[in-house]
Amino acid sequence: MSEPKLRVEEVSRTFPAVRRGGKSTLALQPTSLSLAESDFVCILGPSGCGKSTLLRIVAGLDRPTSGQVLLNGRLVTEPGADRGMVFQSYTLFPWLTVLDNVCFGLRERGVGLTERRRIARQFIARVGLSEFEGHYPKQLSGGMQQRTAIARALANGPEILLLDEPFGALDNQTRALMQELLLQIWEGERKTVLFVTHDIEEAIFLAGRVVVMSARPGRIKAEVPVTLPHPRHYTMKTTTEFSELKARLTEEIRAEAMKLMDGGAATG
Image: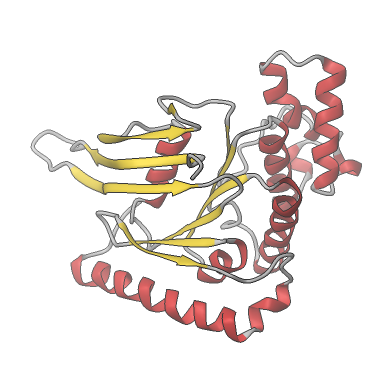
């Protein structure tokens, strides 16, 4: 059996008290998770359950209180080019064009001008923005900005793509189209993907496996395989199999949301 691409081993996170005399906050209970090469896994859970905290630890943007993360057998201790991160906010450099934003990581790695533009244009074309490579972020719609962010992450050739509710700020129609675009890219690239969302339909449509997290302090409550065939089309959302998965996951998430209601509103 081959070594997992990503191993999260008993990772926990406790945040210290924000003021003297206050209480520390256990955001993430010891959590373990493995992803194989080309896996597309969605982490699904109620607000405040620690799913974004877990993703930030995998990205190297936060340090675990205990446990470790291994990518290709190497310990993750800081951000690196082997992980491509896409956030809900568009995080583009406003003073750079689409082309230069997508080139940024390649430039930082010392890739020559001609080669980095060739690579950048390849991924700009993949997300359908070739006619906009000279535009600045303020000249783009939200969906176009997020397509640019995805192209930038992919252009750097990461080992794994990490997405933290990347479509959460988009309107429903644009969000659905972005889901289809991301799937098309994944079906072509077969990158390993870890995707955080609170949207049940989004998780089912995108993932090969959905990881359900409990209410805070978060832990993995269930792992649900999604056997919908590829390539996937939006009409799958009306199938019996999709509806059954949605009903199961709705019950899982509802139970955790009820715990939050009983215990007080979560933050973060």
